[in-house]
Amino acid sequence: MTRKPDGPLRRGWTTGACATAATRAALLRLWGGSFPKDVQITLPKGEVPVFALAHTDAGDGWAEVGITKDAGDDPDVTHGALIIVRVAQSAGGGVTFHAGEGVGMVTKAGLPIGVGEPAINPVPRQMMTAQVEELAAAFGQPADIAITVSIPGGAQIAQKTWNPRLGILGGLSVLGTTGIVRPFSCAAWIASIHRGVDVARAGGVDHVAGCTGSTSEAAVQKLMGLPDHAMLDMGDFAGGMLKYLKRHPVPRVTIGGGIGKLTKLAQGALDLHSGRSQVDFQALAVMCGDPRLAQANTALQAYEIAGKPMAQAVADRALAVVQTGFGGEMQFDIVVIDRAGTILARAGA
Image (cartoon, rainbow, N blue to C red; front, side, top):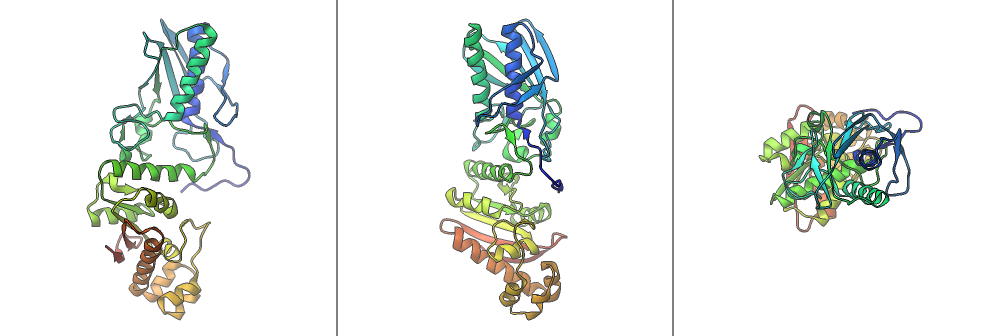
């Protein structure tokens, strides 16, 4: 995991903001006759960033601009990617969107964009359409433009994202609701969990699993025989997953994780990050009926002292926590796993 830098963090710009700026600059060449030196856009909340042009090209009836994505201090895999937009005059039909190299196509229902569409999300589409309408009015042109977004190398970068699991194939998504990348924000991760739930439900999946890491995920997926699109990238955000599932239920939910993370869940924590929740060893000793655990320094050390009875107590209590807070329509089970992927305890369905 990338370590958060010390000191103030520099924010960045989403792929959607970069595509919008590239759209504006390309239209200025198509209708105005020349590329600007740089381009300024207004984001949904009023910010007015300025973008430098990294690539330009034009031909008969089309122009394209590339802008290098700057994600600020966020460890975004798309930082440094070139976001290229080609605008071309079309014969009616308004504004249409197309996927070029490195932009994915939607193949599963449940996402904000329909199956068969390029993975350009609604807000970036709205932002780019607004640029077309504004500049068409300014230059006296019909607002009939085909917009093609390309991200060279995007297919390779996408393998490091959740896109393949969500059914977005062939490349990256053009994302962003505010246009701003806030460094080390939890919002993007939680939004991806939500999209995973949406895709699972739309596909008729009746059993999903959220795990704290790759080892627990592999163990749970094998244990339960679940397909990739039933696996939710929960990470530390148990609350983000469970709260969304309560509003959008799936019949069966498995939660898997290591002894430390699930001990915190058993003690009522819904954010399992080490910086935002800690194991209460006094309470753990009471829960397990083993006074020795009050002196432990880590959950792993507590497990080494108490063994599988502690793991089973954690599984049982974690199950009670999620059933009490999020049960009703859903059946839960808990799987506690060690660092080697061995199952230490199970509770539930």
